Image (cartoon, rainbow, N blue to C red; front, side, top):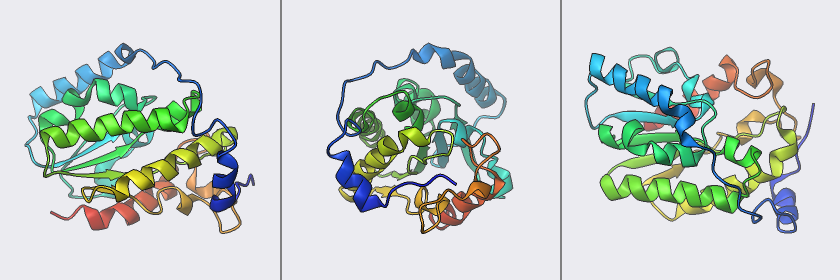
Length: 225
């Protein structure tokens, strides 16, 4: 199994790399998701959702989440669209989050951004835009942020994942409305730094059913009305 370095050791090494800071990478064209966003609008017309609920948003790990399987009875919207960057989520923020006026938003995104070569600070800037716009519209709402999860398939980019998670943790600590969810990355490794392969899909990128059960365990305490 592939290993990663211990968190303090890795962080020290990051300071000498471009994982935190580096050349800004252009955002991809968000129009590639126009069809996915149109399907959300169609679903809303068929069954108009209420406001003040829970919205899951982000990239493919959100899109692949079957809410009723892992959170039976939970009234929540899944507005994930696979392959997305946070910049894409920001572009469609009104369509995927804000118009529902959620009391709780759960975000998993950033891994695709980092894998594309964006340095951690650039991705953090996009996250801060997301947070700012969310709370500008919904100042009493709450936000749960799931860490960027390193994966065996993208192991060569693990430094960017760790750098970004470090920055996210700092930002969450500054705002009581934001929770950086403990366990959303480190639970996928042994205490020796080995990937727990049973938690990953056979593509070695996405989560398996067992991986989603980790999400169920760590998210459930925050989902009570």
